[in-house]
Amino acid sequence: MAERPKPITPDEWFANYPFRFRHSRVGLGWSGIRVDAEQAMPACEVVQPPLENLMLILHGDIAPEGVAIRCGGSRFDGTGTSHSLTVVPPGADSRWRRTNVCDSTQFHLTPALVSKVAQEAFDLDPARLTLPVLFYSRSHPAVVAAQAALREELLTGGPGGRLCAESLATVLVVQLLRHVGGKPGVRGLTGVLAPHALRAVEGFVADNLHRGIGLADLAAVAHLSQYHFARLFKQATGLAPHQYVIHQRVERAKQLIRAGRLTLVQVAAEVGFTDQSGLTKHFKRVVGVTPKRFR
Image 1 (cartoon, rainbow, N blue to C red):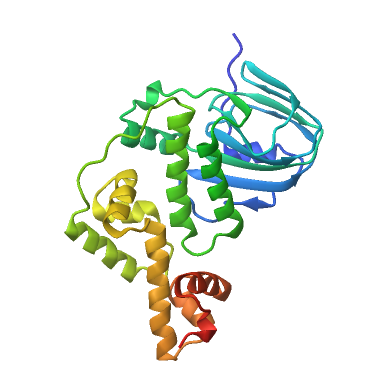
Image 2 (image 1 turned 180 degrees about the vertical axis):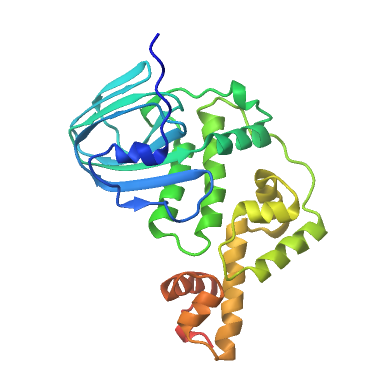
């Protein structure tokens, strides 16, 4: 019996393409998920060994030409469908032939992330988790919407991007398991975020605005799983964790701007924005005016 090929990493997957995706999360420090987007993916033919991760594809605009895909024991021959979902489970080898230019965003989810969400949200034994191969499906708009939010974060996200992306990745897995995995709903969540835990998180954020803050960091401070922390925190504050961090960065920026001792570039760095444009974008959205007009 022939030995099964060793599953490949996302880096090896993308190395097999004859071109490079122009947008990638590599280097952004996102945990549990890699997102790569190419808005003008050229026609190509690629043979891929089995992946170690779960892969999802969000298909954007597609020219009306042929597509031929072989994935595990499934196949698709026909015309790709725009704004749709493809699912490639871990361990499935594949062959891809595209004769058209298309807009494609690929999401590689680690088994650890999928298992964590399966256990926390659904009380599901990860060993019993199965997902089907799907090609160009429009039957799961909630999953596509979650993909689109992560794609937007990749293309335009700034400070808070890591925390926002990790939160959105959790949402994506929940929607995938609920709608594609056939789970009827998220497990009911009881309890509230304890006041001392909320104060600890608020203090941690205040002390670390100058650096990247991840969802795992905040959940660890509260001694909760990431999934439960995110839901309880929003229940307690009305804001998702990444929204809260951005608001706190803007509030600190307001204080520094009023003090008048730092340039806007220095203010941006002091409160954890990667550059002045990131400060301006979020400041105007929260405050209603740009930092230059605020006094």
